[in-house]
Length: 258
Ligand SMILES: Nc1ncnc2c1ncn2[C@@H]1O[C@H](COP(=O)(O)OP(=O)(O)OP(=O)(O)O)[C@@H](O)[C@H]1O
Ligand SMILES: [Mg+2]
Image (cartoon, rainbow, N blue to C red; front, side, top):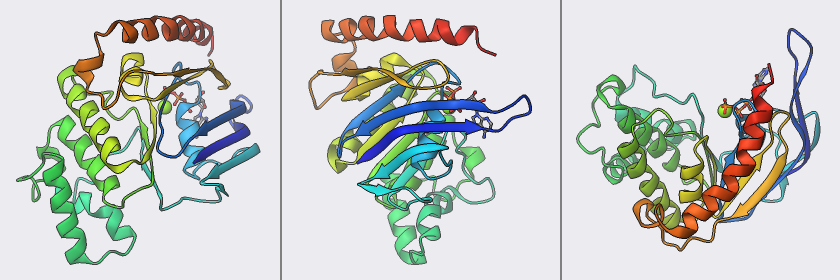
């Protein structure tokens, strides 16, 4: 469903160009939930931007559902690291934004946005302003906005990083049930190894910059999963230890970098 083949990305910069990804390969199958982990600055966001058609690789091929990526694609829902709601629009109009950009008529998009807000626990806040929502509610609204256009592929870049542990856990459960009901393909970037193992079918570990895949770990925890059901299981702890020892090597390698 998602495929990076031998992809190299370089960014021009003041002190010379910087290689963010170096001959990187990554495949995500249809319906798979893959978590991408690696040190800060290793190129995780770059991987998503390449797949979203927002960054052009210097070399290599990028395919979505077998087709080369040439620009931004409507079948991809991307919740970026910096994603925010537009402060001058009501929450409902924010949730309806992606539909509006795709030319869905006003009545349909407002109905759909209302239904999605209810599903995401935001009923009653349709006419609120984004500033009146909590951090977790804003994230749920951003997710609802993307879900409104039924993306076949969902890419999320550390969506819950700024949130408290309890809200994170609830939203992780939301992601799990969403994925179970829709069968969409998810590529999920996170710093948090525990989160990666909790959600994913497969955890892919990137090296310190320039990013390459240095490990891929099948997460054989039972499905359907809920955070609290798996988090304390012996298998979970075992997986966490194995992946952590590889991740900590990459964190140490990243430490010395500018
Ligand atoms: N638009 C850009 N122009 C120049 N350099 C960039 C740009 N975007 C990213 N970089 C550089 O590319 C490298 C990888 O960045 P990227 O954002 O992909 O990392 P990341 O793994 O997502 O990090 P984090 O976990 O901190 O979000 C970094 O060294 C960064 O400075
Ligand atoms: Mg990033």
